[in-house]
Length: 208
Image (cartoon, rainbow, N blue to C red):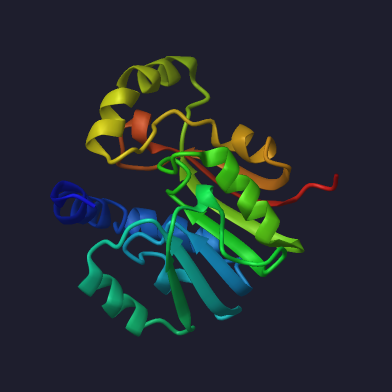
């Protein structure tokens, strides 16, 4: 990571995504997590305090290490054991098929370079009865907002370290052989519409 990404952008995102409003949505999303959990896109460990007691172990994957001291402190305060891997999910996950009861992404699919391969890897490592829990921002269902997202997306990718404004999260998940069983599309309070159009849901592996 460069100086901007590691020292500036990571602090801005830790502040913005650590707000009480976003924390409430994290709690709502993670309430169903259970058993052995894989979190892709660990970031600055903002999800840790929102996992319920039903989670027995957390494995986390991230291509970068951000705010190392802050993350280490949050891990030390976690109720469950945490195992960390530094890699990009789109390049393949170092886990056996059907290894996890739950897989989680929060504000992650926007920034993965190759999102379709990453979603296929999520499906591969998820147990047949497991849950894929997601909380993501993405493309608006309002065509006017979506056009603005398309217009500003090149700038967003530059200043936000590869983050896309306009990925159609629901469609991407469905097209990667998942069946979405719960989906709430909403505007995150306090955020501009082009950045705050959010998808919160649960998916199962689709039956081939």
